[in-house]
Length: 320
Image (cartoon, rainbow, N blue to C red; front, side, top):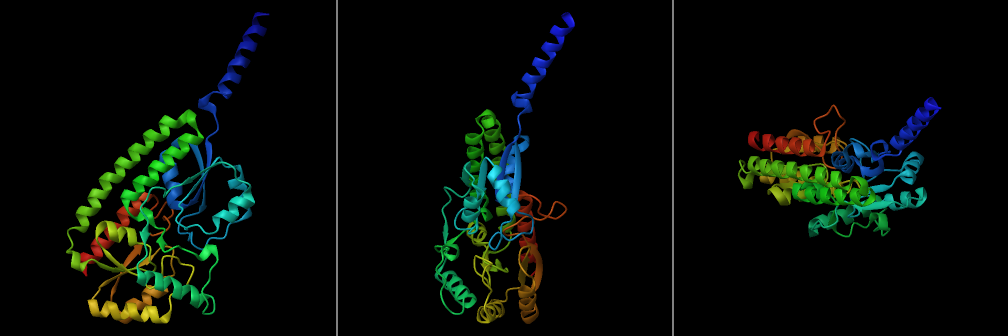
């Protein structure tokens, strides 16, 4: 009888432990692309299980979801997306998956960067070129004249982190304090890095801060850190740069004696290599725009991405 009581007590104890918070399953979160996936992992820690749809070196502009993506999203409790018309394929995936959890739009509260008239003209020309000379009016191609790459300013990165922490806390109140605490620590790291990036870039005279990149993904970086970026391709990689646009860039490089051009990890390098050959401008290396590198690369996290990009840019400008 005594042994039976002890066995029953042990069984009840084990059952209690199995349903205690310490043994609870982590919150299932889906992030649309690798930069957001890393932010969720930093803030969520051990309390989340993250599935990232567009992985390292992947292009979120032109991604095509898989049945596995639909399954993962259908099982998730939280979806973290960029917003600002970045993921044109995502609404269809949400509908297909039957997702009914908490949606966090990471860019909520960011002041969007309006495209310049020149950038708007480039976007329109590229879309018309890709659709037989006619403007394409479907929602997926309507960028509303807004640049979606807001994470390229660390001040906006802080807003992203706050939104993600708040979203996780809402979906999982049991660990709310942990999410908010990790979010605050993450933001503190961003503040330190932001000051470091500004100090390094300020070592280069502002009239020499001219960079050519594959596509127009660094507008927020340029706005925040006073660097002029020139790109033959618009804010989206969906459309190809025209020969006329490339010729204009080449003329501009020659006229302004721009010496540094960069390839991007998500873009075909041939365009930049062509520009480099025709202008003798030096290819400064790779910048990470819309995606992180694999874990063995130079930019496996959001903060590493920023360090890498700033270091590459400053190095190229100082030696050009």
